[in-house]
Image 1 (cartoon, one colour):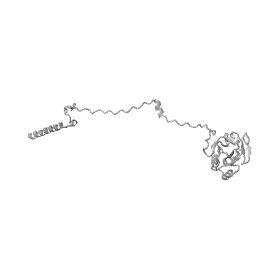
Image 2: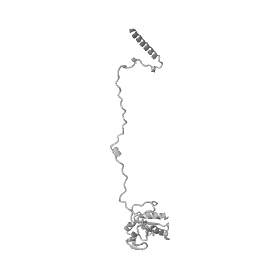
Image 3: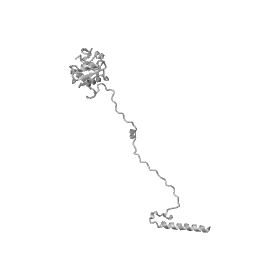
Image 4: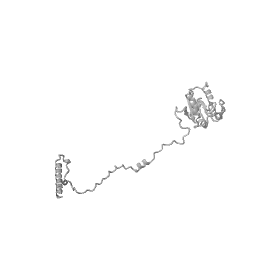
Length: 224
């Protein structure tokens, strides 16, 4: 038994000597394991190192005014004043079937002998209209017949200026009649934006009765 132990120890010692010799014969010193004597405190167990997380980059400090400005909602665009009336500037020429004009411009056209068309219904036309105006209501059954008669009238030419008006600023009948005129080839169509109420408000002359009957009514300036 002792013999076997001695032989085993001898083999272990021989193996250790052979391993040490082989290790020392390595050409590259980097591959050699340093001896215990070259380590500092080889048998001391060091505590694990504390890993400090990286600090977040510092954010620029904003002033209180900048913070309030960033949090505040965007300012709403300025609203148009509710005091605007029909006397506001009309759209420029070229928009819609006819260029819109205001009451003073309409009166200038009237003084220059421009032809007017009343787009209101016949009953309203007979109650009062601009002197000499022709009655053409697009809502009445005989509109197409009356429009053809107007277009074929020898005294009407497609290049002559024509002013169309109706009941008020919000009345679209004048624009509808202007569209028919434009479709028929008339080239110089003016839409009186304010209509008869503004005309009467300026105390311009007014006629009553059916088309062609010139009976002066209202208006300090009298019929033309």
